[in-house]
Image 1 (cartoon, rainbow, N blue to C red):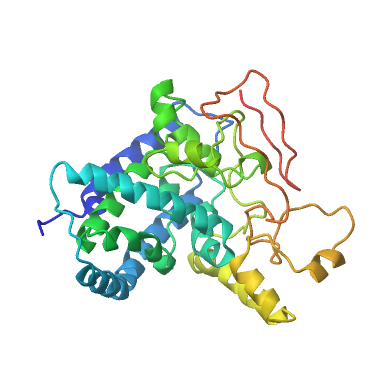
Image 2: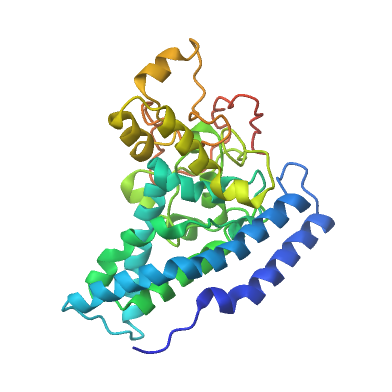
Length: 335
């Protein structure tokens, strides 16, 4: 097994440089419509990123043990060569798409991923706002190991995917030429992914490639300026609460559940799902798509039909339809 570098570690100087350039760009050319930077928000994102490095080291111990055992059991072997690496990266990106999608539609997985969506800003420090409980991610890459990809190669591929996604967390890059926008995940596509408007929720899950979203019906083009964050924001810069608030909400809901059927639904259905008895108790006309914790959830209630995505390759229109604003939120129109 050839030595593969730590892509994230080697990219840290570039992360720092690009973030500094973005900060300076807001000083020199302010954009009053952009979410921009907030000192406390950026500090929280950086703290979450540093914490994730520490916690990931802990989670890697059991994950590496499981991957190594599976790798020894499979008779398949994929050599690490110049021409196999792109193919392995393609496979890893495909599995990343399903991991990412799963972490939006299953509440116990969303409890991990909600951290990354908890900022109401959208800049390069947002890319650093990573969860401290990433132990839920590893099962999605088991097929790669069973196909004979060495666990060290899996780690390298995941690092490359993560490094690529750093630059898409910005409002300073507009739409790129159409062929690039059609194939790759871009800043425009990822702004949609981080938006809290109803028509943008749970879309554009791709890591490096956006073609997976086009293939599996989860693509939406950027038409209006996104409003970032959760549908009910947590309004805190406390890293510990940012990391754990949805787990706490799940714990409260499980304690209040009537039976095991409800508990299973609260864990494995969508983040906005509620038992029928609780939905019936809501005030008539209350259509806010939230979970039982008023500050925790973002994803749409899976009992409501998702809006159909536009046709693959759809571009922005001159006068996009204005979706209904979430309660207390002002939806901005694109310039």
